[in-house]
Image (tube, rainbow, N blue to C red; front, side, top):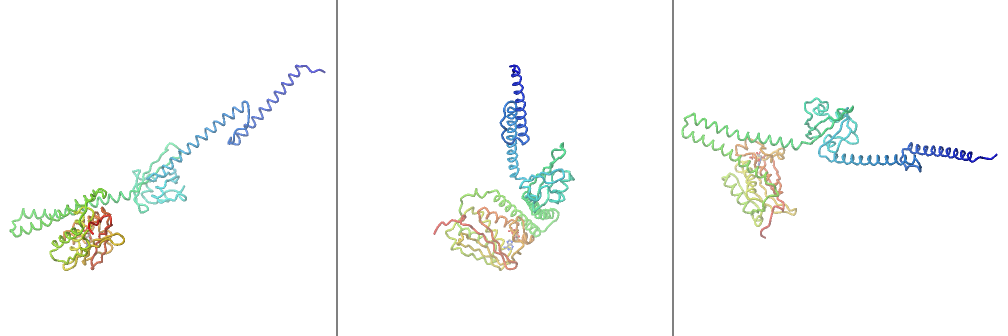
Length: 418
Ligand code: ADP
């Protein structure tokens, strides 16, 4: 039997078709296996339609991976930026569970990043105002409260309200310092008003008396004398307030390069105290010889004001017959010099010492006023010292006396002669 060329051709065609069918199935199978394995590795070697398909899939996947990496990087940068934000930021889910917070929020609210994720925030921060804020029980979306020895201001904002899981963003701010400053400003205004009101009331009373009653010349003189005392008191108060304002508004860096002769300054302040004291106390001055040749950096009026305040206080709070000593000590090995004002007067109980330099802080308000005190003297001293990098040290014992020491660093001293 002879095989016809047509039959051969048909046979070859059939074989080719079978081969093509098998080859296509084999490539299809490799492509599917590659896809099933996640297409992480490079595509298998293919040809024809499957090769084109694999290449397109591979390109799309790599593009998607690149986009995901970029987005992840952007998210990480964004989270890093939120991390260093000075305000506390905290995300809560609809159940008030903590989802994320930055370092500032952890510090403000006392949270532990490892322990407190997914905890209900109401159980962690139990301040009633804060809990009311979280439950929407307040008219405002912000609240200020004391927590962890700080004053916190917390703002709460819900977002994603259209989504099934609306979240809450909390912004926390430490306003301790601002609150203290506001309280100090309020106290200061109240104190000044109070200090001015009392003498004004006395003067107004005398004015009315002088207007309505026919006083004898002696009585008139007496009333005018008392009015004078009150105006003096107000003048002293205003002078001290202006000094304080000037000191507070002069930044230390802008201090002029003025120098004061130390010995002359000590002598002037001492003389001034003696004249004011009119011989009621012993007022020795010590170390004056070693003060020669030293100059003190700053304005003469500032140092004069500081020393006169200390000497004035020592005299006012030491009964007549007592001793008030002014004592200069040149720089020691540690580089600090000192000017001390020591008295053997009434002294101050230890609990008052840390607050003495606060404006209007007085141990005994009526004694201070009766002796012409404004309650601002030591605040002025503190400011003068601060501006020159110097310090005030106070030692005192009730009934035995006090010692106020100006500790002066070498930076505010200059040796002018040997
Ligand atoms: P004041 O004008 O009241 O004296 P200061 O600021 O100078 O104001 O002093 C504050 C308070 O410190 C005084 O009211 C007084 O109670 C107390 N004080 C200051 N210096 C002395 C001192 N040398 N001895 C006893 N108490 C003093």
